[in-house]
Length: 80
Length: 198
Length: 171
Image (tube, rainbow over all chains, first blue to last red; front, side):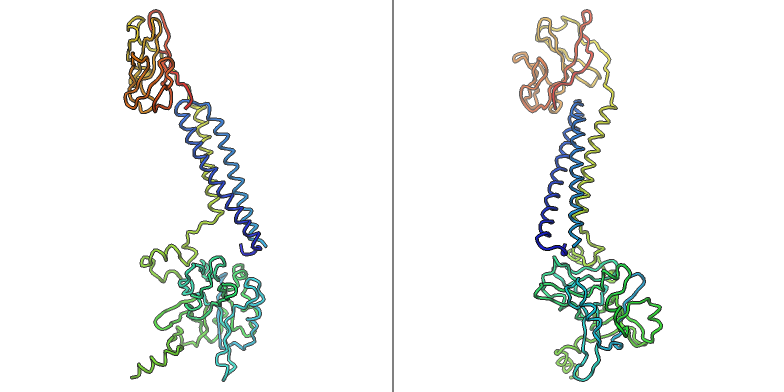
């Protein structure tokens, strides 16, 4: 990251750190959602199964977007 | 890399310093030359020698670095110190048997030859080898060097320490390894030599 | 190059902070973010799998089974039976002159057998003091997370037939 001026470099790092923290939080949410859905399904309630899957899909697409974002910032930091 | 090897022949050096200036042109190290240029005994001879980093197989500079800033890659090139990690302590400067790393206190950074990694990694020659008119520094296939009378070697003995390097030194045909008694080059050596003779 | 020195004699710090990039286990930001996203994908696939299972598992149809005859047990009396399988213990309570309710006897907390408390008119679990309502099996007190599954009873002639299991309430 030594190619950019210091301010841009710092901002890039902060942005990446923020995005990574968000991804971790989303992942934790997804883990909880999966375990709760599984418990409900095994108890016999098939009601929450489809909405949970949809929400899990939304969380995954959010993680994917953030991942692409991290890659872009990481890449742009290596270009002058 | 790419079949090329680096050969240093100090006897061919004519002291033109083209290598020093070519190296200094590169923006990667902010216009500082990474060539270690020696006037051998300026008072009595015009002989000169230009050296690059020898890219040792077990780089002493890297082993001595407290910040883990010097890395040796799979291709054998010992990279210059990583900017975020180097603390400018000059441990590597003191550790290197060849005296290659240069410390820049104003930058708090060590910089050294990395064999023009941006060039050699894609098959081009380093700047110094490209411009050297006498080919004291040459980056060629081993078959071309075989045509010379001198023999390349990459084994050095510093006292009892054996060092093998990526870069070859051209030596007389009978020499297998360059053997140096480090004490001969230190002022303490005179006392030790005197004590030995008693 | 690194063939020269004997790794087994190296101290741990030398192995962990190796000068050779091939020995490093340095994870880049990109690799870490990619790993997290893949884990996220894994969770999503898990949810999809549950959806698939919910569509594939057929609703279990239990064969009806006779439980008791009307008037067999007194008011506030209890009869134990098994439905739908021999290992599914159930409890039937005559709550009124003409009212019968039946529930699975397995407490939803840790599967202890519940019993009917005539004094308090409720189903009680002796293990951790979990109480269930006699009307619908909902949890009145205690650690049970879900209501007791109710056995659907039907009258046929003078007999009480168990025809299904009703699992109620949210998890």
